[in-house]
Image (cartoon, rainbow, N blue to C red):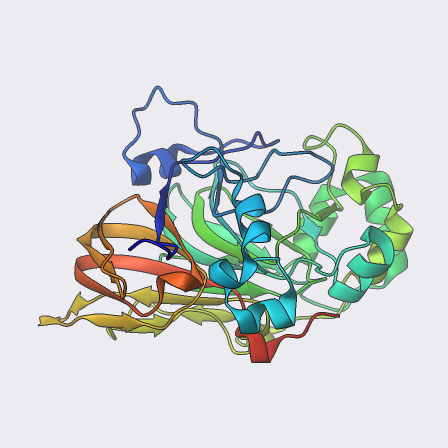
Length: 351
């Protein structure tokens, strides 16, 4: 195995957040109830929290930040074609997110807006894979039901009219296996009792319309650019049921051993597959092409093998970062794994 990078099992990485949650993450990871777990676990992260030096970054077992390891050897970690398209960025941030309370109404910038206002190649398109729900009425809130003018939204932000903001959004009940693709600019919130594996572009740009009771001040909500400017990147168009159908997917009944979890069009930003080598009485060995990837083991146990002879026992609650250099890999066993990857290089070019 010498000379090749191999998969690395990662411990929990939970930077402090402004909202409650985390019990579902502790349960998945098999942590004791005394553990002080936060509501977000940033897995395989080369991204810091907005305006912070290191909070959010994944530290590898040898003490090196994953971000620095990738920068030191990008072709081995990411593959030459990825580096050509996206440079030495992983192009991906994966989180386990357990909403112990409803999150505020917020949205994220597009690539072009982020470049203009935050000097970033990436905005923050994201997607949610619902892996657990609890409580009376787990819901998500994607997009405005009807087109809203920007002056109205600006007034909501000025007066902090949370009921009006929430009422304007679609309200969608969710169960495990549902996935929601959230393009940049789409206003949204996650309701209490929703546990997701979240894929995002590798930034922490959140523009928060509903900041009171969540954030210390409006500056933290609009990231210093003002609401009027922030709202330029907000999608104020209406999303009716048919249009919602283009971003919401129901995968629970799909019994294939490999399931593409996310809506069409999301693969320009990231990819997510559910891997189940043993399903519906059939057992197979799944072959995985070389790629930088984050693995989240949702249940069961099995084995990951790399083409260089590496062998890794996978168990419920474990998370791995897999370098491109690990080569062609296989997964077998009675388990469910979510494999998260950056966009295919041909889908995306560095701006």
